[in-house]
Figure (cartoon, rainbow, N blue to C red):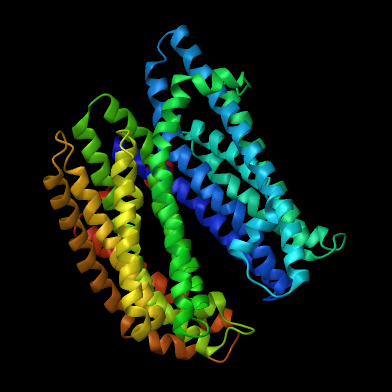
Length: 529
C-alpha cells in the first residue's frame, strides 16, 4: 500500500470513530439540557467541568502531541538492540511516573484550593450554586489525572501507528457520562452530581481501555523512582519541548476567555450564539483535521529524524490537500444550508427564531475559517516533528494578538459577527505565518509546497462553486415541501436531500477532473470490497 492510500485509510477509519464520538458528544449535551436546562445548577456543572478540562488541554494533550510522541518516536527508531529497547522502556516508565506524580500533586492542591479557583471563573450571588460548584469541582478534578494517563497511552499507541483504540475511547467516555446521568440521578443529590460521577468513570475507562493494547505491543507501564523519572534524558527532553507550547496554548485559552468577555458588550445572547456556532464548527473540524493531524505526526517525526525531506514535504502536501478536499466543500454547503443545519441541531425550547438568526449570522463567518483552522492543525505537527516548538508558539501568540485587536475594533458596530470575523482572519494569518516559518527549513522547498497546495485548493473552490449550483436554486423548493412538521422532518430531510445532491455532484466533478485523491480513495474502497 503506498503512502497516499495508507494515509487515506487511517484518516478515514479514525474519522469514522471521531464522527461517532462527536455525535455522542452532542447527545451528551442534549442529556445535560434535559436534566439541567439553563439553571444555576447547569452553570455550576459547566464551570466545574471546565476547570479540569482547561488544565487537560494545557498539559495532557499538549505534552503528548508536542513532546512525548516525537521523543518516543526517536527512541523507537533507535530500538534496534536489547540495550536500546531497555532505554526506551526506561523512558516510558519514567514518563509514567513523572506524569502520575505531578498530576496527583496538582489535583490535590486544586481540590484544596477549589473555592479560590472558582472565584476566578465563576461569578454568582447564589451561595447554594457556589457551594454546589465546589462539590462538583472536587468530584471532577481527579479527571485531570486519569485523562492524563489516558493521553500517555494514546501517545504510545499513536507513535506505534495504532489509532483505533484511542479513537474509540471518546465514544466510551460520552456513552458512560450519558448512561451515568440517567442511571445515577435517582440516587444522587441532583443530576449534576450523577453526570460528574460519569465524567470520572468515563475518564478512567479511557485509560483502562487502552492499557491492554500497550501491553500487547510489548511495552510495560511501570513506576520507577522519582529521582530516575526526573533525571531520565527522555523526560528532560519532553519537559524542554513542552514548556514553550504551554505558553502558546495558554494564549489560545485566554483568547477564548477574552473573546467571550468582549461578546458581553455586544448585547444579550451574543455570547451564547458564539458558543453554539463554535460548537458546530468544532463538530465539523474534529471529524477531519484532528484525525489527519494525529495520523501524520509519527510519520513526520520519522522523516525528520532520517532527513527524508522530500517524503516529509509530500506528506504535508498530501495531508493539506485531503483537508482541502474535505473542508472547502463543507464550507460552501454549510453557508448555503446554515439556517436549516442550525434549526435541526439547536432549535426547540428557548432557542427560537431570534436565536437561530443570531447563531446563523455568527456561524457564517466562523465557517469561512474552517479550512485555515484545519490547515493549522495539520502544519503544526511539521514543527513538532522537528522538535521546533518555538515557531508554532510564536504563531499562536500572533494569532491571539490579531484576534483580540480585530474583535475589540469590530464588536461595537458588528457584534458577534465582528468577533467571528476576527477569529477567521486571525486563523488565516496564523496559516500564512506557519508556512513562512516552515520556509526557514532549508531542506524543504516550501515555495513548491505552497504552490501545489494553493493550486489544488483553487481547483476545489471552483468545483465546490459548481456543486453548490446544484442545490442553490432548488433548496427553497425542497424546504417548502417539508415545512410545518417536526424539526427532524422540516429541516432534517432537506439537509439530507441537499447533502446527497451536493455530494454526488462533487464526486462527479472530481471524477471528471481525474482527481488523484479520489482515485486513491476509490482504489481503497474497491480493494476492501
